[in-house]
Length: 396
Image 1 (cartoon, rainbow, N blue to C red):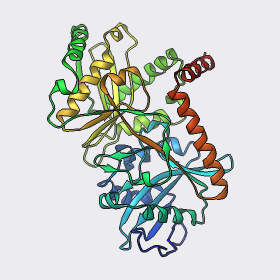
Image 2: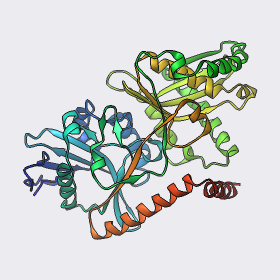
Image 3: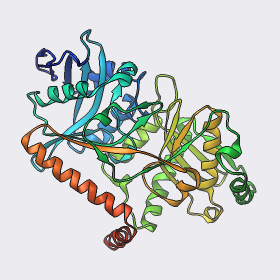
Image 4: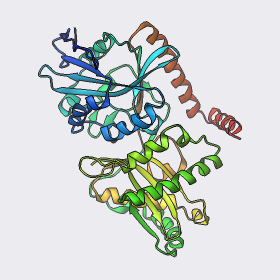
């Protein structure tokens, strides 16, 4: 048997049933601060920027807690009590079923376990089966792990979670790869650059026109103040629901953009085009030493929107991160036309619905079927057009 532990209850030690598994102990913690030391220690391993403690702690505080979600942080250890893996989950009752999902909700592009680097490279199906068995045997029942939007690979390693039952996620994520030392024309063609330069000349005539990565609290606050006025107008014009109006979301994004990582960098980086009279465009996302992943963006409602400021800003961002040595960039889930101007590939993403109880098996069938149906709609132009018409009608 394996060990599972919960906050405020004695830790019960269980032996691994298979000597082949490196996982000897498992804890399930219900408090972010209790998990923080181990969480931060695993941030030197394999994870996406979305799984950093400083990011998800803000989400849980401002969004998760308001939605009634309880931290469900699963940590696996080896025989020397060294952490191998951490699943940053939150659990809740959904139609009578106890479901554990990745923290971060719809504002996270990728979900992953945090993995110690050597374990990520060598983890086997035996290890993962041992992990699931320990979770299944924990006294505070979880019926199903709904682990969605996981990348097949991260950096140079396959995601070990692909060894569990899975299916293709609903949406693709457009991806741009940047070869180290590449020339600007290798990233964005000279012809596309000339088109953008022609548009930019109109903006360059504006007093104080500039591109910059926001650094000061003052700049971040005033830019977010503008964003939370303009973005709802943009979404209304597109007949899209305003996801930024959900309870706690604005507070979460403001806190995450203000927060700093231990190295001093911002948890969320904001890039803007502006002039003395207005902010023209904004892109914000998370970054590590390899990848920038876009979270949210918008652009002005003024006449300056005619000059493609979002595309110009995206060009500047790509060049900036290439100079910093990053090797990839993604523009978030979805197939918007502008993304394909820059991203010629896709990041493969998968979902896993892992039942742990009998009722969890029924829930897994339902969740899996719904995901298949949504993907079919997304991949079938006629069905997608119908869905857009219905969505527009509902939001009139």
